[in-house]
Length: 365
Ligand SMILES: *Cc1c(COP(=O)(O)O)cnc(C)c1O
Image 1 (cartoon, helix red, strand yellow):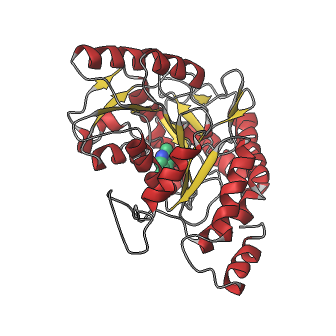
Image 2 (cartoon, rainbow, N blue to C red):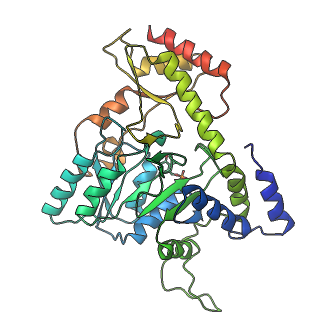
Image 3 (cartoon, rainbow, N blue to C red):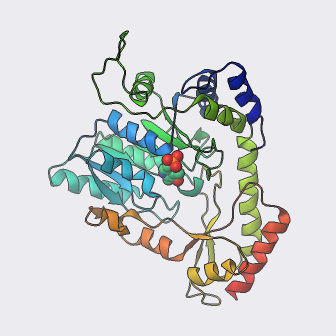
């Protein structure tokens, strides 16, 4: 925390708005769209709920296929399964580590040849690094498939000044406890079509028809953000730019200190891209330098109580998605084998950073 979260929560208490809806929810939605500089937003209980509703709005039905970046957190793909649809996973490209537009097109062509037009495409901005949205949108438009942007990790990132979260037909944001700003738990669905966002609010509040009694013509969900939680969100929006600066500063420190080491490659910004640097991530090449593997480094750091984590394990390698179609090569798999996320909190001190850097240098030798 650090902004004026308690002020907004106090207002909710003072006015007795302890409900899912209320002035903080409206205010938070307004703050989000003001930050994105376009579109409409529905504040929800999680980013996962946002992806689920986005797929429903895209018309995904049981038996349909949805294309999803393989290299991601399971929450990108799980909502496909909620709808009894089939995920079709696509490899990453080495620049951004995100969905490869060429593998995407190969996947679309092959699925169509097999008799199935994919219903949606879910690219992800891993660790805040923008995916190649221009190329992905071009491919998607060629086949008339809507893009649902998983921007859960990328609030504050942009491509040529246009924010992540505004590139797809719909986009999911997350305010989970680990994200760049947090409401403890929460998310938002954003998009440029006001009617779609209005529909998502309706679905997120049990799909209640306008009637004096409780009347329902559709299956609904309890996915709305509460007025208390949204109060935290309003305070957090005030410090988002500061958080992005802190995270980018972490990256700069790591890069300056470790960038010259032979075995180390950082996740770099492709041209025109600005990353919020949610997490600083790097690759360790075990054939170079001291010939240490990612796991060697992770375990060596653990001995000093420094927590690091392997990159997301690709979905096409996950037991739960065994048998799902996959298109691409071994880019995602190799990122997983060699990749490590470094401590990246917004509250790391210079002392913390240099402690971690020292231990990484020692471990690499
Ligand atoms: C965190 C995250 C989500 C899910 O967000 P929740 O708010 O935790 O449900 C989805 N996709 C990615 C890539 C994430 O990192």
